[in-house]
Image 1 (spheres, rainbow, N blue to C red):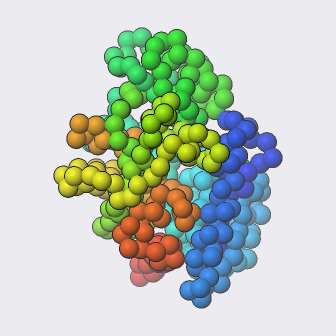
Image 2 (cartoon, helix red, strand yellow):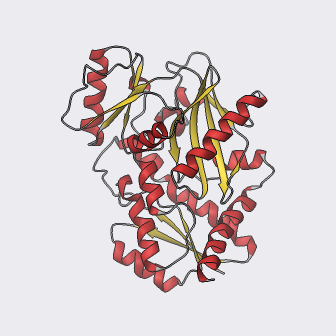
Length: 336
């Protein structure tokens, strides 16, 4: 079977964010090569198709490859993560079957504020929050309780998240909001910081989705802030990286596991995720607060979703093959 594995390249100069953000952005090619290596022994004809600055050239290369399924690993377009949904929309217009969530789900989950609006409207637990748009100041009438955490509205992979993201007073809050506005050129999500256990709930499949073993990020003593910062996720030589350790399955009580899995599955269904996704949660006093939903999480062999799959007895090649077959089944169902 012809399979095209698509991933996004990074422009020479990022138009927003920090220079170190390139590290996570450039991980897409490594991820794509890992997926290709996992699929190759299964007898498929695999071709890597990078998405650069020329969308037309990308579409033409896809057409020439004549893939029966596209493995879509694109997380944006030429440095703009907000265009992630447009790549999936292009694949829809080209009439090719592809893995992962459709444009609507990608767009909703990319927007942290819209995600939280929907979660709140459907009585799913999420920290209290307010959006501070570009050019606005934090409204003093908001009844949020310090400490607060400030995040870019549209980013993922912990971009824009550092120890200074957690603030304890108005002065620090105003400074961090300015940082997000100036550096990432988008609104700032301000939410109450939940002191609790950091959990990742991965899901796999469709109708029904399967909740994989829950993973926990354990924060070691001495860490300035108990968060998964950008440094802690991507900079292997940093103190933050050394002091954040994943454990899977997480040592939870049976009731806690059921609660976490339940809210993760309900959130993924609500946000129209498909094939695979990851829900980031803070567990405090028995309440699983949803922080965000990643409808296009990292599929590298050492990333969280693969770790949870391994804990469920699903090897990395089997995980990738299973995701491929979910897209193939969708294609066959559409034809029928």
